[in-house]
Length: 368
Image (tube, rainbow, N blue to C red; front, side):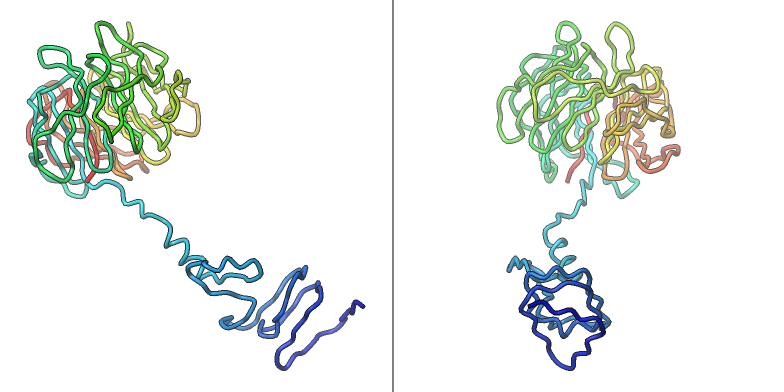
């Protein structure tokens, strides 16, 4: 038969309860053993230590998968820490090709110094912003060197060597944009006889010809592409006139892109950067020094995010987890300057050293 306790119960020792219980308990917790199937409203523990209590478990691995014991805060934290991968991000920026030659430059995100030589592309190429980055390698696609190219070059972030071939795009093109997911590189828009709206995809793991991956909404050259973890965002460019459109498309699906708002003004020939939550467009033809920012989660017009240290166009781009780096380009003459700005603050970019040579119309990467 049920029993109702209408006053305090003082226990000197252990109390074992085998039936159903309800209500609230106050005490140091040591008397609560054998609680099973109990609709307990609350337990108030006055003791500063709960180690050794049978109804509490302090197990960092969570191996036992108990359904009747409460884990300690320490064990919950230890378990979560053990399964999370630190989001340290890339340490270096790379700039490949361009009008100054086939050199690959490398510079540290952490230090304001002149970039160092990191080998060469297999062939000089310019008029391409189609850079992509895996966790260990950089990829530079298409471009122009007296004729239009379809080839894809690959180089290791860890070693200073000449790049090797990694297959081809499905057609020759130049003035195209590039980005990547964790497993694939993408080549967007560009000129192949005429401006195109195609998106092609190539796997980092296989040396093959890139395949069709849908379309952006406009046939465009000189666009720039930012990225979230799951989507590409192609910004601006030139069709028969400059546009300010931001297109959004999925890495996982071969479909036509959808509208994702607009840049502040019509623009092209800039540099694209990305944080975990936002996309950025820096510079413009003209040139200009504007930096735009937009949220990946909302279809709205981009807002102002400060300025580059100098107006520039035809720049390369690299992104750390916290900052955007705009490399080289044209400021009225070809530049070797590396600019850096913070993703979290709307301020003017600052100098971050120089490329080993002045260059424009090159591709950017991040890794190492």
